[in-house]
Image (tube, rainbow, N blue to C red; front, side, top):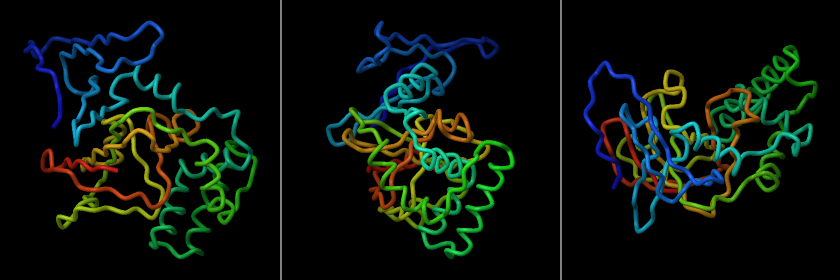
Length: 246
């Protein structure tokens, strides 16, 4: 069940904002109080499932900052190869790696796509390092073990699709052989990622990578999961919104 507050009716021409009450040390409280007179974009709503309380982490600017401080990967901790991996992957290299891991691309095609992105970033001066495709595959486990952070609470992340793939044909299980990209922000780049929305309930203790701050595409607020995650369908919230449990 989703827990949302009842909002006060307002005049349609009013321009209002929200106020979040946080502890002085900027640690988000268990149940943040939000006065929101516009829409859910500035409200971290929660979902109760099987006795656990899952909550969005990125629908307010302050909560996004707090999540980055708690979960983010400091750039100065990355090796040259790891830095190159994140820059290439978050530019368009994800299509190469995930296409290969999911069996959608031959290795030859995946290598070409990866090298094209690497070359582009070299030309732009974003990178001064060549990272081979095979080396990028070998880095995946290392990156998650070295830089992944363990969640200390139950959270909700969002995954958008332009066309419905997760749960199509009434499927109730979803396995991703590739790296699964999600966002803590419900409305991240909707014009790019589409209107089919999946809310994923992620239990505390899960190891994730939060890429904001090291990504080559800002304001995705991306949470990355390692290959081979398994999701269980929970329910439909509407025609275009589904809930899943990791």
